[in-house]
Length: 239
Image (cartoon, rainbow, N blue to C red; front, top):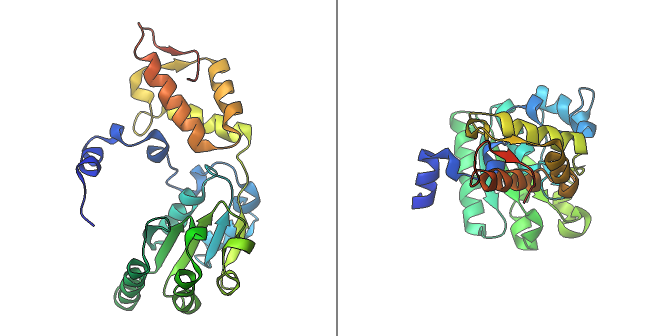
Protein backbone atom coordinates (compact mmCIF):
# COMPACT_ATOMS: atom_id res chain seq x y z
CA UNK A 1 0.00 0.00 0.00
CA UNK A 2 1.44 3.37 -1.00
CA UNK A 3 1.84 6.16 1.53
CA UNK A 4 -0.45 9.11 0.86
CA UNK A 5 0.50 12.77 1.33
CA UNK A 6 -1.15 13.01 4.75
CA UNK A 7 0.65 9.92 6.04
CA UNK A 8 3.97 11.31 4.81
CA UNK A 9 3.29 14.68 6.43
CA UNK A 10 2.25 13.04 9.71
CA UNK A 11 5.46 11.02 9.75
CA UNK A 12 7.53 14.16 9.26
CA UNK A 13 5.44 16.23 11.69
CA UNK A 14 4.07 14.08 14.56
CA UNK A 15 1.78 16.91 15.67
CA UNK A 16 -0.41 16.12 12.65
CA UNK A 17 -1.13 12.70 14.15
CA UNK A 18 -4.12 12.70 16.54
CA UNK A 19 -3.13 12.96 20.19
CA UNK A 20 -4.88 9.69 21.05
CA UNK A 21 -2.69 7.88 18.53
CA UNK A 22 0.52 9.58 19.67
CA UNK A 23 -0.16 8.76 23.31
CA UNK A 24 -0.73 5.03 22.86
CA UNK A 25 1.23 3.14 25.54
CA UNK A 26 4.35 1.48 24.19
CA UNK A 27 4.99 -0.94 27.05
CA UNK A 28 2.93 -3.20 29.25
CA UNK A 29 3.62 -1.11 32.33
CA UNK A 30 2.21 1.99 30.62
CA UNK A 31 -1.20 0.46 29.91
CA UNK A 32 -3.85 2.10 32.09
CA UNK A 33 -6.64 0.09 33.66
CA UNK A 34 -7.79 -3.45 32.81
CA UNK A 35 -6.27 -4.77 36.04
CA UNK A 36 -8.55 -7.81 35.83
CA UNK A 37 -6.49 -8.83 32.78
CA UNK A 38 -3.11 -7.22 33.40
CA UNK A 39 -2.64 -7.58 37.14
CA UNK A 40 0.59 -9.42 37.96
CA UNK A 41 -1.35 -12.57 38.95
CA UNK A 42 -3.79 -12.50 36.02
CA UNK A 43 -3.83 -14.82 33.00
CA UNK A 44 -3.03 -12.31 30.28
CA UNK A 45 -0.15 -10.68 32.12
CA UNK A 46 1.41 -14.08 32.80
CA UNK A 47 0.86 -15.17 29.20
CA UNK A 48 2.56 -12.04 27.84
CA UNK A 49 5.54 -12.33 30.18
CA UNK A 50 5.91 -16.05 29.33
CA UNK A 51 5.50 -15.36 25.59
CA UNK A 52 2.58 -17.78 25.47
CA UNK A 53 -0.23 -15.54 24.25
CA UNK A 54 -2.95 -17.49 22.43
CA UNK A 55 -5.26 -16.09 19.77
CA UNK A 56 -7.64 -13.64 21.42
CA UNK A 57 -10.94 -11.87 20.89
CA UNK A 58 -10.92 -8.57 22.79
CA UNK A 59 -14.45 -7.43 23.53
CA UNK A 60 -15.23 -4.01 25.02
CA UNK A 61 -16.47 -0.46 24.52
CA UNK A 62 -14.58 2.06 22.37
CA UNK A 63 -11.49 3.68 23.85
CA UNK A 64 -10.73 0.94 26.38
CA UNK A 65 -7.41 -0.12 24.87
CA UNK A 66 -8.11 -3.04 22.52
CA UNK A 67 -5.78 -1.83 19.76
CA UNK A 68 -3.19 -0.66 22.28
CA UNK A 69 -3.19 -4.03 24.03
CA UNK A 70 -2.68 -5.86 20.74
CA UNK A 71 0.29 -3.63 19.87
CA UNK A 72 1.83 -4.06 23.31
CA UNK A 73 1.46 -7.84 23.12
CA UNK A 74 3.27 -7.91 19.79
CA UNK A 75 6.00 -5.62 21.13
CA UNK A 76 6.59 -7.62 24.29
CA UNK A 77 6.66 -10.96 22.51
CA UNK A 78 8.82 -9.79 19.63
CA UNK A 79 6.16 -10.64 17.09
CA UNK A 80 5.52 -8.92 13.78
CA UNK A 81 2.39 -6.77 14.14
CA UNK A 82 0.00 -6.58 11.19
CA UNK A 83 -3.07 -4.35 11.71
CA UNK A 84 -6.11 -4.97 9.54
CA UNK A 85 -9.53 -3.35 9.40
CA UNK A 86 -12.52 -5.60 8.83
CA UNK A 87 -14.46 -2.54 7.68
CA UNK A 88 -12.65 -2.07 4.37
CA UNK A 89 -10.34 -5.09 4.11
CA UNK A 90 -10.89 -7.94 1.69
CA UNK A 91 -10.56 -11.70 1.86
CA UNK A 92 -7.81 -11.52 -0.77
CA UNK A 93 -5.79 -9.22 1.51
CA UNK A 94 -6.28 -11.58 4.47
CA UNK A 95 -4.97 -14.51 2.44
CA UNK A 96 -1.95 -12.46 1.35
CA UNK A 97 -1.17 -11.61 4.99
CA UNK A 98 -1.44 -15.27 5.98
CA UNK A 99 0.84 -16.32 3.12
CA UNK A 100 3.43 -13.76 4.20
CA UNK A 101 3.12 -14.92 7.83
CA UNK A 102 3.99 -18.45 6.69
CA UNK A 103 7.15 -17.14 5.01
CA UNK A 104 8.14 -15.22 8.12
CA UNK A 105 7.60 -18.21 10.35
CA UNK A 106 9.62 -20.44 8.07
CA UNK A 107 12.43 -17.97 7.47
CA UNK A 108 13.06 -15.73 10.46
CA UNK A 109 10.95 -17.93 12.76
CA UNK A 110 9.25 -14.71 13.83
CA UNK A 111 5.59 -14.97 14.72
CA UNK A 112 2.92 -12.69 13.26
CA UNK A 113 0.23 -11.04 15.34
CA UNK A 114 -2.68 -10.37 13.00
CA UNK A 115 -4.82 -7.69 14.59
CA UNK A 116 -8.29 -7.42 13.06
CA UNK A 117 -10.21 -4.38 14.20
CA UNK A 118 -14.02 -4.57 14.10
CA UNK A 119 -13.81 -8.32 13.50
CA UNK A 120 -17.58 -8.58 13.84
CA UNK A 121 -17.79 -6.89 10.42
CA UNK A 122 -16.31 -10.01 8.79
CA UNK A 123 -18.89 -12.32 7.25
CA UNK A 124 -18.88 -16.08 7.81
CA UNK A 125 -16.73 -16.83 4.75
CA UNK A 126 -14.12 -14.30 5.82
CA UNK A 127 -14.03 -15.68 9.35
CA UNK A 128 -13.85 -19.24 8.02
CA UNK A 129 -10.75 -18.30 6.04
CA UNK A 130 -8.93 -17.53 9.30
CA UNK A 131 -9.52 -20.94 10.86
CA UNK A 132 -6.62 -22.98 9.41
CA UNK A 133 -3.95 -20.36 10.13
CA UNK A 134 -5.22 -19.80 13.66
CA UNK A 135 -5.49 -23.54 14.26
CA UNK A 136 -1.91 -24.22 13.16
CA UNK A 137 -0.43 -21.08 14.73
CA UNK A 138 0.61 -19.48 11.46
CA UNK A 139 -0.77 -16.27 12.96
CA UNK A 140 -1.72 -15.25 16.46
CA UNK A 141 -5.08 -13.65 15.84
CA UNK A 142 -6.19 -10.75 18.00
CA UNK A 143 -9.66 -9.61 17.03
CA UNK A 144 -11.24 -6.50 18.49
CA UNK A 145 -14.96 -5.93 18.68
CA UNK A 146 -17.49 -3.73 20.42
CA UNK A 147 -20.19 -6.33 19.73
CA UNK A 148 -20.89 -9.42 21.81
CA UNK A 149 -18.68 -12.04 20.13
CA UNK A 150 -21.15 -14.80 21.02
CA UNK A 151 -23.43 -13.33 18.36
CA UNK A 152 -20.94 -11.77 15.94
CA UNK A 153 -18.08 -14.28 15.74
CA UNK A 154 -18.58 -17.80 14.42
CA UNK A 155 -18.40 -20.65 16.93
CA UNK A 156 -15.48 -22.36 15.16
CA UNK A 157 -13.33 -19.24 15.53
CA UNK A 158 -14.42 -18.64 19.12
CA UNK A 159 -13.34 -22.18 20.00
CA UNK A 160 -9.82 -21.39 18.77
CA UNK A 161 -9.54 -18.09 20.66
CA UNK A 162 -9.77 -16.91 24.23
CA UNK A 163 -12.38 -14.19 24.66
CA UNK A 164 -11.37 -11.38 27.02
CA UNK A 165 -13.67 -8.56 28.09
CA UNK A 166 -12.28 -5.04 28.52
CA UNK A 167 -14.04 -2.64 30.88
CA UNK A 168 -14.57 1.11 30.60
CA UNK A 169 -11.58 2.78 32.23
CA UNK A 170 -11.98 3.94 35.81
CA UNK A 171 -11.95 7.73 36.35
CA UNK A 172 -8.52 7.63 37.98
CA UNK A 173 -7.11 5.81 34.94
CA UNK A 174 -8.57 8.38 32.52
CA UNK A 175 -7.33 11.21 34.74
CA UNK A 176 -3.81 9.78 34.62
CA UNK A 177 -3.95 9.48 30.84
CA UNK A 178 -5.05 13.11 30.46
CA UNK A 179 -2.41 14.41 32.85
CA UNK A 180 0.30 12.42 31.11
CA UNK A 181 -0.77 13.86 27.75
CA UNK A 182 -0.58 17.39 29.17
CA UNK A 183 2.93 16.94 30.52
CA UNK A 184 4.55 14.65 27.95
CA UNK A 185 6.89 16.82 25.86
CA UNK A 186 7.75 14.15 23.29
CA UNK A 187 4.42 12.68 22.26
CA UNK A 188 1.94 14.84 24.14
CA UNK A 189 1.19 18.52 24.68
CA UNK A 190 3.95 19.34 27.15
CA UNK A 191 5.86 21.65 24.82
CA UNK A 192 2.85 23.93 24.32
CA UNK A 193 3.11 25.49 27.78
CA UNK A 194 -0.58 25.06 28.60
CA UNK A 195 -1.92 24.31 32.07
CA UNK A 196 -5.32 22.87 32.89
CA UNK A 197 -7.55 23.58 35.85
CA UNK A 198 -8.62 20.69 38.03
CA UNK A 199 -12.25 21.42 37.14
CA UNK A 200 -11.53 21.21 33.41
CA UNK A 201 -9.72 17.88 33.77
CA UNK A 202 -12.47 16.52 35.99
CA UNK A 203 -15.18 17.51 33.53
CA UNK A 204 -13.35 15.76 30.70
CA UNK A 205 -12.86 12.66 32.84
CA UNK A 206 -16.53 12.48 33.81
CA UNK A 207 -17.76 13.09 30.26
CA UNK A 208 -15.47 10.42 28.82
CA UNK A 209 -17.39 7.59 30.54
CA UNK A 210 -14.25 5.46 30.58
CA UNK A 211 -13.27 6.15 26.95
CA UNK A 212 -9.59 7.22 26.80
CA UNK A 213 -9.83 8.26 23.15
CA UNK A 214 -12.71 10.61 23.91
CA UNK A 215 -10.78 12.16 26.80
CA UNK A 216 -7.63 12.70 24.74
CA UNK A 217 -9.58 14.18 21.84
CA UNK A 218 -11.33 16.54 24.27
CA UNK A 219 -8.15 17.74 25.96
CA UNK A 220 -6.46 18.16 22.58
CA UNK A 221 -9.31 20.36 21.36
CA UNK A 222 -9.39 22.31 24.63
CA UNK A 223 -5.66 22.99 24.57
CA UNK A 224 -5.64 24.26 21.00
CA UNK A 225 -8.67 26.40 21.78
CA UNK A 226 -6.77 27.87 24.75
CA UNK A 227 -3.79 28.67 22.52
CA UNK A 228 -5.99 31.03 20.52
CA UNK A 229 -6.32 33.31 23.56
CA UNK A 230 -3.87 35.62 25.28
CA UNK A 231 -1.11 34.09 27.45
CA UNK A 232 -0.86 32.63 30.00
CA UNK A 233 -2.66 29.75 28.30
CA UNK A 234 -4.91 27.83 30.67
CA UNK A 235 -7.57 25.26 29.90
CA UNK A 236 -10.68 26.33 31.80
CA UNK A 237 -13.27 24.49 29.73
CA UNK A 238 -12.95 21.19 27.83
CA UNK A 239 -14.65 22.30 24.63
